[in-house]
Length: 247
Image (cartoon, rainbow, N blue to C red; front, side, top):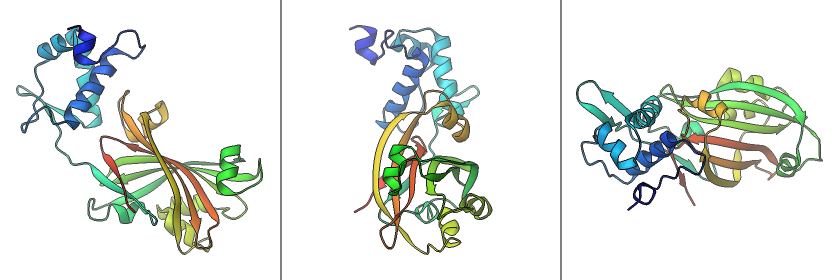
């Protein structure tokens, strides 16, 4: 059996071998292939299994250690980090703080950036605005117990929500920021979930290593009258969060 057939790796894809190995290890962890002790085979064994040199395997392991997926113990080896994933509910009333209430002691959002811009077609359609209408783009990052779990880009009608970025920065909460703009309650109208490799911006914000996977939730929130108030794209660190879709 060829190395590609045995491991699923392919030198012709253009994807770095260390990244392919890291993905294989992630998949193995998810499938429970490393037993109760969670100890990885030695680097020499992994190098033979994947048909690469030890340096390539070491790069894959280092990336997963940086992400917190693995931990290296001097003189003992490399082990799967047993920290449980957070379960984030996707429901009609989706709230970051409430969704993780029983899973993390401290939950907070941070404003990273914001800017006024003309709505591109998909943003205008989602918010029910005219093409090129003024919108406010807000970049945020959410933490649970000091660990970044998601990064979001949100768009708001600039005429209705002028100043919401400053309110988010002050309160650390989109929900509380809404209340300052007269929105006491809101609901999730739609959510579409996909997965991809994190880009450079998300790698830095979420403190991930190249090759990490993010779950992407594209959503529209509406007020109690059904008017769209927020269009967002949220990237969750897949090794830290699972999305639970509720009826």
